Amino acid sequence: MTQDRIALLEEVDFAWTAKSPEEQVLWEERLAQLREYKAEYGNCLVPRSYSANSQLGAWVHYQRCCGNGRLTKFVVQRLGKLKLKNLRI
Image (cartoon, rainbow, N blue to C red; front, side):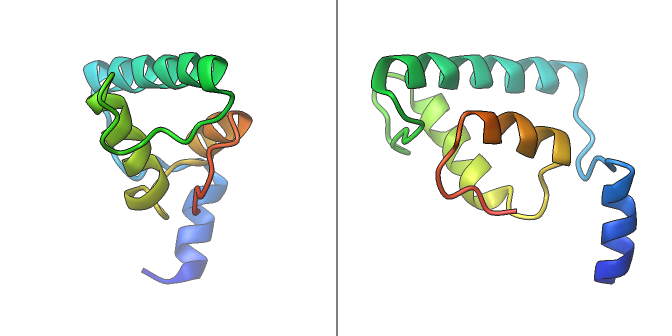
C-alpha cells in the first residue's frame, strides 16, 4: 500500500487491527496498569520481564516496538499522554 493511501486511511482514524470488545477491555486494563506503574515509579519504563506483572511488561514492549506503524492515532494520543518512551509511529 502506498504512503498516500495509508495517510488517507489514517486521516479518518482507520483501525489497522479490529479489536473485539474483550480485546478493547484488556487494552484499557493494561493502560490503567501502566498509569499505576507511572504513579509508583515516575516513568513508563516497564521492563519487558517485569516480574510483578509480566503481562504489563510484554504489553508495553509491544506498544513500543511491534505496534510501530500499526497504532491508531487515538492509541498514540493516549499513550503519548503518559510519555511512553521510544514509541515509534
